[in-house]
Image (cartoon, rainbow, N blue to C red; front, side, top):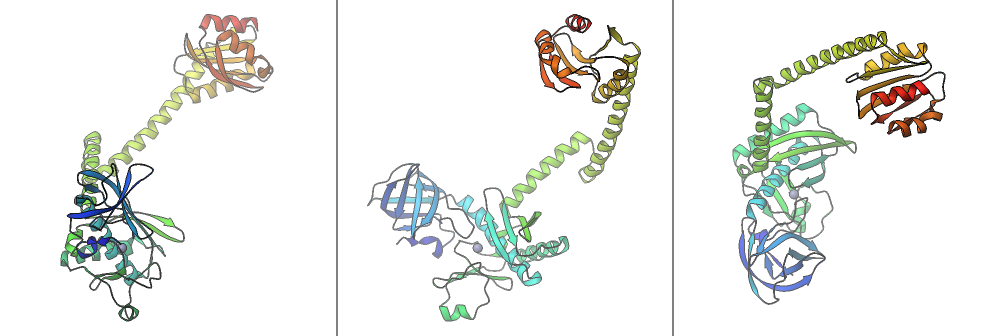
Length: 381
Ligand SMILES: [Zn+2]
């Protein structure tokens, strides 16, 4: 049984240990030590990374009571190796995890919301609660959590006896009968947890609620603490600064600037649609008649224009062909109320080097023919 050094000292980042097993894994190897400061995945917190004698440890997991270090290379059994935990990563995770305890303890005590799920990922942390919390409730919890951080309270980890545990009102997602380990933030939370934690609430740093979403009758809350929250603030600040420069607006007026832009955009779209319809009317006035068929060519006619033009032209001809683009690259819309277009589609596409969708009254697609070739085709049709 590996001695769990991280239980004695969550801040121990380097240690020496003896390799007791080394096995080939699907990728790399698994190394078992007689003692380790590497925390294996558990309690919602990921497994530690780092090195053993310079060999990268990519992950640490507990499997059937064995703590396995997943390494890139093998290490000889019986050798004393030097372990170095990636402590920057571990500390960030501890900040988030201890912050989550603080948050969940407050949510439970103040608003009766139980923590029913916890995930601590590479760039995000989520807490699932048994009931939804209102924006006011969330703001209250966040403010009280940050006040607890400012108090710099000691965080205590202990293993109570069964009798002691029976008298303690601790939070736990599962029934634990032996080796109960409790993490206490005095006055705020008492929770069963197997993971390492920071020493004081001050080490948690900033506690920030981000987004929320409905989840299984309760709520999923995206939360960040400490270094992760500071990095997130930095990334958001850089985005705001870039938007501010793009929109020539102060950062606290970005929403107003975007709203203005959207209103302008809507007005421009309406003007463009009007212009498109007007262009369709001009094109109809100068219609090019090929026998009983009407053909229209334009470089830029849009959807609204095509619709207007087809409404005008269709009653006045046998087949109406609208070609948008230029020689070698036309987008075509061919319409008819008098001819079964599905029957001519294959021939038309073969002669005009085109392809597209078809039904009895409309053909839409692209062709690479020239205007002269198109006019010739429709005059013979
Ligand atoms: Zn925990």
